[in-house]
Length: 183
Image (cartoon, rainbow, N blue to C red; front, side):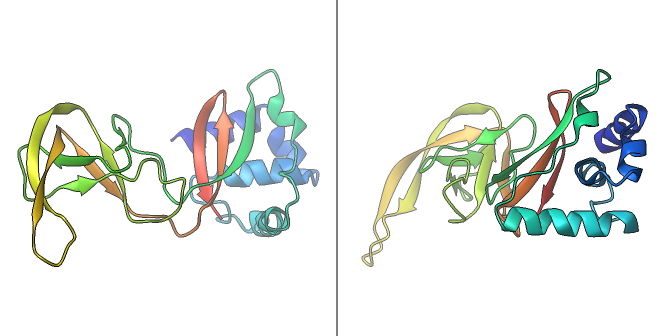
């Protein structure tokens, strides 16, 4: 829905007209905002392929001056992280910290933080902490010993797998991310 609103904002600001006038940066921004994907429209395939090639070769993101019209600001930023953001209402579990959901002590999770350092497993996102408990966790030695570890109890635990690529482009409209595209 946000991407549709972005497309309407960009169109109302005259960006759609500019995009038809062979303005590479505006075409790219409009294509990235498509809720069906940046290459869902045949006219977007070539500009998006060109964008990805430019980014791979260290060339900067193209400009679209019309996206900063008085009717609203729209732009794109690039970054790298194997993991997407945690869902609304949750945050990344600190590296090395442990969590369980509710009272279930049989399934515990270990945090890796935001995941910016690399793939290294799954990112754990947690909601509100409701308490603490102790869980016996293997010490990792061959003798079968366990250590009692303090574990946070959370009302919600979400596990995120790494994305297929660490490279992303965020489309920002009026200060809020509208779309994230992986490339």
